[in-house]
Length: 387
Image (tube, rainbow, N blue to C red; front, side):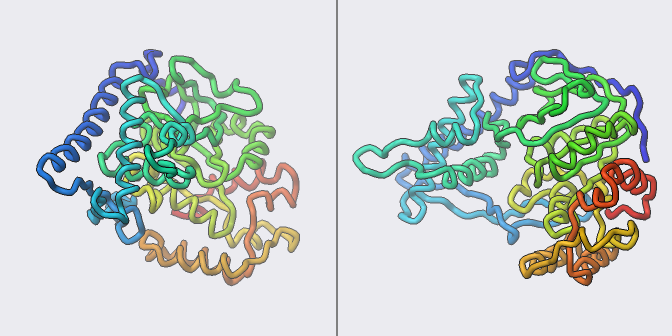
């Protein structure tokens, strides 16, 4: 297990999004949006059907790169044309979203995903139709724009709701404010949606590793037991599948501070998938894996073998249903799980058990068993990690 003590990476100028780097990135993103618009205008001038090529965001267009150990988007794309009734609405929605993102960049403002939906929503002139009926329509369009111009959502000045917290011996600068994450109170540091270096800088770090837990309720147990103090580590949670902001921050802390990442997740197909997303990236956002995935992350539990290993009782069992079994079999078929005998053994053991377990199952033994015995034991013994 790697150790870091007193590591300082004080690159904070305190200028936040107004920094020179942020302005240069904004200028580049604005040029990409302008380039898309110019391409559409040029097509119209030539009396050709305006169109754009949208990379396909689906499993069929995702490849696992074993050398990098991350998911990558393939080259398949679909043409979105204006003079095609089946595509015209999405074409116009894409241009509308692009226009408002350009305005945000020019005005040096940001908007939530929900806010962008309302910015774009209005009646289409001369009709009773809305540009967007609900946010389920606008969210995929934002992602389409990202992959089309190769600019991330954060670079479009669009952010999601904060979800996830952090506590531990690290001092960081967030938008010019210096924050000691050992002194942020019982809620910890709320991880923002945008975690790029021009917004967040690491000033000082005395942590040995990062422990990422699945839920805020589990995180609270670690906070109350002062696990971060006793073991000199950073404890994070993502409220289920972690947001882009949390995943980006984990990647940055791993890369820039050289901190190992250990994942403590539920013993069920969903927990396995969350680990997969942290480690390799997600299928829908494969184009972001290169900056968010942490290929060296380790799964330390909860394991299907912990029921016997830890002497648990039937009280912790949650029966598997048909959906669980189906999902487990799907995960076994993923290329990034195939060939990993330890993972195949783990998942098949869960199906053989016929039950799943939450992280909180360890509390059934004793309230502090999870923080005082289980996790320290797991981190000490690399043979119990899954990779």
